[in-house]
Length: 218
Image 1: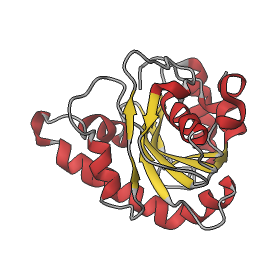
Image 2 (image 1 turned 90 degrees about the horizontal axis):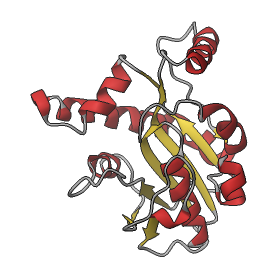
Image 3 (image 1 turned 90 degrees about the vertical axis):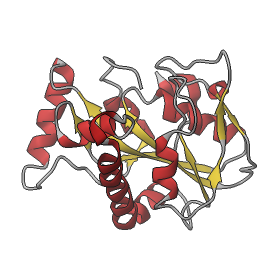
């Protein structure tokens, strides 16, 4: 669906730091770092920060190459919350703590939605990105509508290349399609200690295989 809606405005590559399987550690951290309940937000944010920093250090070059960037991203944008969260999203601070590139400011446009599709008008790009190569960071990928809407908005604003890194690709093992996908991932990574797939995925492949979990909002 995303390809038909946005075509060449989609991100050039999408890469997860790992799979956020419902009930497992990464999925729990992605929930907890945005909540102050039980004093769990800070430790969870620290683990996510370390995960992102390690992924960018170990796999960043591969991601940049897959996206067609010649020298890596010149700036970074953080996918904003679509839930009307007051104040700065905690993901912004997390990204700033481990990424040196300047932050491109985004704001959600009142009255605009993307549902589970792609809507470049969902966000306003508040800084110049003309001809730039950008990294976009999102915390959770479900349908990809938020991250791809941001990628499309950045390209319409003049960005040349956009690479999306998502902390956790949401997988719900209760969904039959997701269960089959998860089983294939487990089989492919059975020799690894965790469900991580730290390789860049071109967007055409990503759209065909990652848009299957649609049971919760981003």
